[in-house]
Amino acid sequence: MKQSKKVIALLTFCASLGYAQEGNLTVKDVTDHMQNRYEMIDDATASFAKHVKLGFSDLEQTYSGKIMIKKPSKLRMEAENETIVTDGITVWLYSPVNNQVIVDKYKENQNSISPENFFLNLPQNYYGTLLAVGKEKDVPTATVKLVPKDDRSFVKSVKIVVEQGSWNVRTIMVLDVNDTETTYTIKDLKMNTNLSDKTFVYTPPPGVEVVDLR
Image: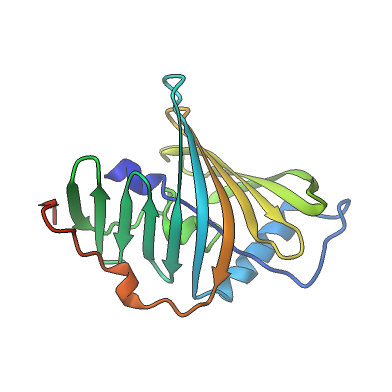
């Protein structure tokens, strides 16, 4: 349960007034644009592909799904292997393989990869470095590396590839303490569509075992 929360996806959406010149772009420019965009967003929806490369083996897995976020801490992530829903008070984790729903209290952790920290906002408790400025399919991009200030964090580092100008996130790459690499590729981004609060309450399917840990 905790592991799933820590690798939730993650997504960030950003905007600025124009393109920055490559020679003058700094990590502060990128993070400021991202933070400014965060202030303008109430909710967001996107499709994603998630690729996991386990650090302790050669096993690799790829999933696809849809994620919906609403400030300050509501999330609904539907993937092939699991569904995670939280209204900011309760969190539901549904596993089709186990035919089970685990229900628990929502616990905010500023050092984990949580919805409000990475989908809509750039965490303030990370050190940032500008790794690269380039182009992907003729679109100017910037790659930022984030390292947690807290040495006890489950996350070793996060790399975020964003489009310059729109500052929409293209890719999020997470490396955890087990050397597992999780990469999210984002597409079909929609913002401020007035998502209903009902979207973030989960009703278990009939016949599914419910384990309530609250």
